[in-house]
Length: 415
Figure: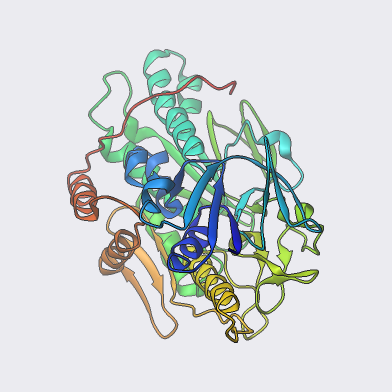
């Protein structure tokens, strides 16, 4: 029986696995975590809006009804292309077909020493660590009598004006101005300063200029200070330097860039400057037609020759495409030759009841856009036992400005 190995249970890997449910093959899914994560809502966990269990579910549970699929909790150490083996920590797993969907990680543009000072947001661990930093900053501000120390503790800097940065900035502002407003006695959380820094000329640069402007104005209404065209030039335990300005801040969050997983190095494949593997039209690597790379780990181009965006819908489409191609090969049928990306649109939320949406033929902003954003995200929750319960709880917390996940947990990091 053909052996199909899928590395990574993100959107691309998981949707490939689900598409292979009825195929006469032995499917193995390998991931270093035992859960599938709905990454678009990670910022909600980081800002105490949702508990991790609302956006992550066990991979085994999601795939439990697929009798041809097994799951391995393991770290990938490398890939032997010639022998068709994936090298794990304690064993080698042979394959006939390989789907690499290992995603991406943070990029600090050559300043890797900033990672401990300005954590990024890619995993549940990242989110709970950032949540701890944010909530602890308010607690420490409550305990100090030093005005300068209090101002530093209540100053939050988010680096990067993409969707994650915009969503974090808006939600931290609402956390300070509404959710925590009545919780403290010595400080006023509403005095917190939230600064969003973007090196480029505008926020959400993949959107039309009018939508970028709307996002900036919406953040300003929430009390967020937006600094455009000003890259971060230095970062340390006391704060950041932006352009020529020194800003004292206790909490710095990195949302400025991504780098692909080590897939290119594992496969000894041609990659671009951020590590994405350059794949052929059918998403296979140039040296082996039975090895495919999808999602954030791959450089995929659309019909216009432009890179396909690294978003969930693209990864899902790629996962389904590769799974269908493999299934057809196993069945002895002619397989599709070219992956064609169907772009449904871009969405980003800006705090409570405000969002921007850009569909191929029209755009939308404001409260209605926020409702569409919310419905779309709940609709695409994968594996959640009761999406209705999650959506009702989420809606109630948004309407009441409640936060049921304001827990400071985990070990203290060496900040």
